[in-house]
Length: 317
Image (cartoon, rainbow, N blue to C red):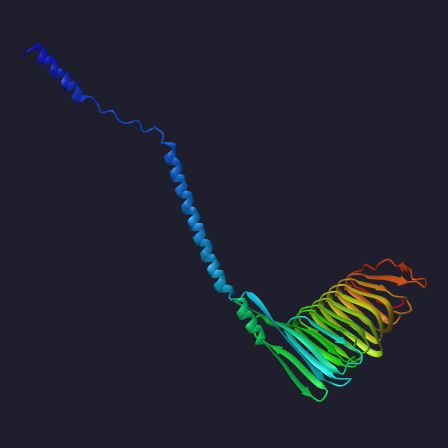
């Protein structure tokens, strides 16, 4: 064999037996490719969050149902004479009753409110709320019935000699300027009775109570308060009975009468002349009784509070 052919054969064999070179996998990807992948990832996450938000909004809308409010007004005037007896029953809403001199009628304005899925439906639903009125001589019953998520705010003007009985599920109740008796049961809401000349009865499981400027030497003021403060100012009455589960009580101005203020948990502050409170028993089961006695010159003299857990004091002692 030709030596040159032999050499050529060996070179061909060496080429065939040489190991195949593998590509270098450590070569980094181009930056444009990495940015493209990142963009698609962000876009996918954004679309997922948007779909989740829309699904949550739809669920919330279906869960809450009626959300938009609407109102409708109703008013009337009822001839009543000078001393009517009025019973007003309301669900959710504010109530204001005012005695007006020389008035011999019951004048009321009721702002009815309701909620629905759109404003037009809400107004229509509010308009459908009925103000039921019944009469038996000088006795009047006024009641509002409208169903779930409805209520009414009342502004009522009555003769000053009227007697009123109010029942409210939720909302503030204000009564002023009456010489007849006042009775209020407010399940949830504050109660204010001012410028009164008759007996007063208030039940307020959850709310503050304010009684101011009451003159009825033989009348009574009976208060039953669950959780809330009681503020008493300028009372000339026969008997005061005030019971408070949790809250503070204050008595200021002038006071004439007897009775008792009992607080289960809270403080009692008395800022009246000592002779005014001589027939008034003050008791704070868990709390303190503080006296801030008004002097003849309009100033005051503060006594150190009694801080015993079970604390009782008689009016003048």
